[in-house]
Image (cartoon, rainbow, N blue to C red):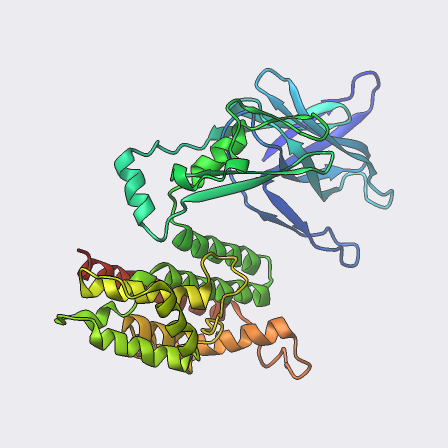
Length: 450
């Protein structure tokens, strides 16, 4: 707590003690509505001591500061500024004039939460910056915060090769730049030069000039942003990020939507892991086998269940049998055909069959069925081994997510009310399965590496 007593210059007005209880910087702020005239509550999202940028000058970003104060009866003008270490102003926002009501006793201080929103702030360089709280034209408080540059080492040729061979890493990143005139330009970057789209190449310099209005855009931060994510683990990072978002929602009191994010993140993780590891499908059936007959029979059995028999044989005829150097190579060939039929050539393929539903766990063509048939990995059995009802609870949370999203008129919110304990249990189950899946799938891959 900092207590400052001062006199306004130019008159004899005395401002009583102003107490700055706390200054909180964050990425976003949610303010709850006032209730019966009570001071509104604020939920800060993304509180951090420092800000991080990929390069400088940084891309425009929004910054929020919450000042918790106790202030005496008077009339005030509140202003917030962001300045550099030399005092140069980067952004300013004014809250206007506020007056403490006359019915407040002269010697009584009230709590006043001040929310300062700075839009599209650009930091020219890394270093130390300051948020200044100004009351009646006098700087009352200086809050310092560092702005840092995100660091990522350059990849060696050998490291790049490993990344390109890993199905779970990001090999291509893209960003859309929207000009003030409305034109949208897409830039992308690929680790493999052969996959780079010609029309999305970054310019040689750091400036892009809009083709329509000739406005200039600095691309320094965009370039660094694109490079930063190349090589990261997109599947694992995504579920971790989504689970983190669910915890933010839970802390804000949005338990239902926190559960929706949790279940949806797990569903996406199961699907993405399943597709990215398609080369390992049916490899568990090759153990101690001199040919691929057993695995091929299982594939044919499954394409019948998926009602894809005709399409599968048609692709076999079109592509031809070919010569295979090993049973593994033959099964990967069949897997590639099946993967294309089920999920398409790319993530946004419009003709994909999507016969397997990861929105459901139990039953034929559900998520657990897929992992058991394609990888020989029985997730349900592993859950049943746990003594704390992992399988039953996870099924319940999937059902509850469906009811929350579709908002059935028969959905009794009191009966299915989501609690913090449920969210903690669900996250515990998801992390258990995630770790188990990664361990099992990695073992399958290593067991059949040539």
